[in-house]
Amino acid sequence: MQVPSLRARAISRSYGKLAAVADATLTLHAGRITCLLGPSGCGKSTLLRLIAGLESVDDGTIEIDGRVMSAPGMTVTPEDRGIGLVFQDFALFPHLSVADNIGFGLKALPASERRKRVTTLVARFHLERLADAWPHTLSGGEQQRVAIARALARAPSVLLLDEPFSDLDGHLRAAVRQSVLADLRETGTAVLIVTHDPEEAMLIADEMALMSAGRIVQTGSPQDCYLRPVSIEASRLLGEAVILPVRVADGLAHTAFGIIPAPGMPDGEAEAMIRPEALRFDEAGLLMEVVDIRFGGAFQIVTLASADTVIPARMTGVSLPKVGEQIRVSLNPACTAVFGC
Image (cartoon, rainbow, N blue to C red; front, side, top):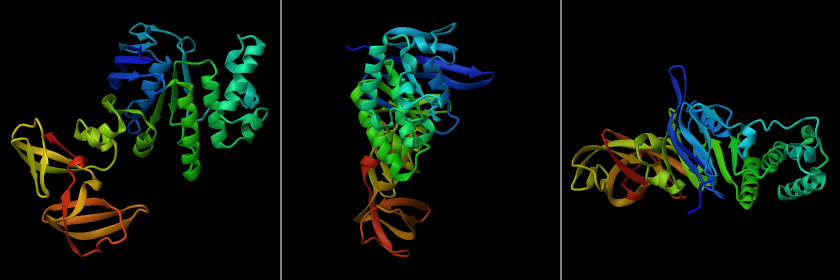
């Protein structure tokens, strides 16, 4: 079995009484992009700094290519870890050209090998016409590609990217993201991208790690994390989730909208997590009134009400109901999950 590029085992880091990272476990594999997702202040940047060797761990271990890099009382320096790190502001050297920025960490190599490595990276990240340009003349997307190429120059086992697309807007952000990710996948490096944007994380990740209050609460594919969250807390990290009280009997949860599977759940009171897209038109479903409609481009958010239940539905199509209309809806079980109280 291939050794993971990085394995962090139960690592913790506290500042006084504040536990910034608590018992966090994470594994990264070569050629895979993992997104570390969580709200601001949840400990993502601290975890990144621990992996990079910029801070020491209080507990747990960090291994890179099977070698221990961090343990209590022991921290291998960042430059000796085989880690590439790109901060949010890219931190290019303003007095160096694009090519010299990329080759900055290669001074120990013979000049011919250094030029070859820089030329390869310049080509891979489509920077040929900018090789002699100064950083201040580049666009945000171009600066980003230079910063990533520089981080990859020493062929690291792991590349860490801190909110790499946050300063890019609209169409540029999507275009740059697609281009950069395609280039990154070609390198075969294990990549960890820190973000607080759930939609972006699901679009780009092969694997996800959901973080809240210093803890990694779930890992898995974007589909598993979104459709099969391990807790209500995890479900809310990936977008809107409506929580409704339900009653479980014989492995089935009884809701106002009908019955949904609850395998392994004990009988009794529980809670159902419902994604906005779980609601669908169904002539045999629950009768609800449309109380609001908000246009969202490719979809519309239709707010529905019945008795004490008010719930948003994410719907598509051109023949949607109007405010004040009565419609019948049921749930798509694939977009729901049931948790104990």
